[in-house]
Length: 116
Image (tube, rainbow, N blue to C red; front, side, top):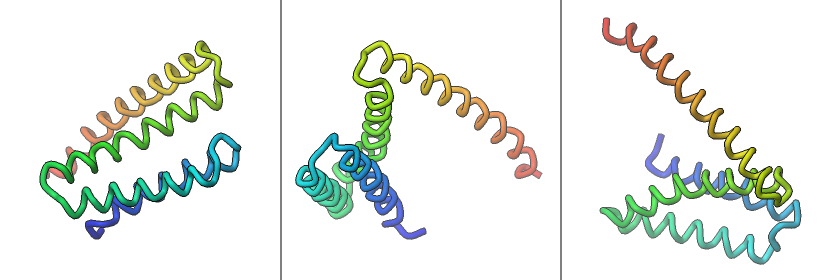
């Protein structure tokens, strides 16, 4: 994979997330265009500056976009009710913890084959 592949994945994630919000009527197309521009500028700035600033920008995008889409999903599914949103977020947290546990189990299992 080239060094720009992860940036393309971040852009693709942002496109899917923002376009879903536009199609559902939560944000306007003008705001979506502005958001696309900000995503691309921040990624390019982080890539070109490099160093600690580049790492910070890339870290914020790798963590921020998934968290923002998770919150958006929970707000949409919860219908704006605070208790429903917290219930959805708790269920997703339990799912993430269970998947992390499975990842640890399978990575330990498959590391046996690698050590030989």
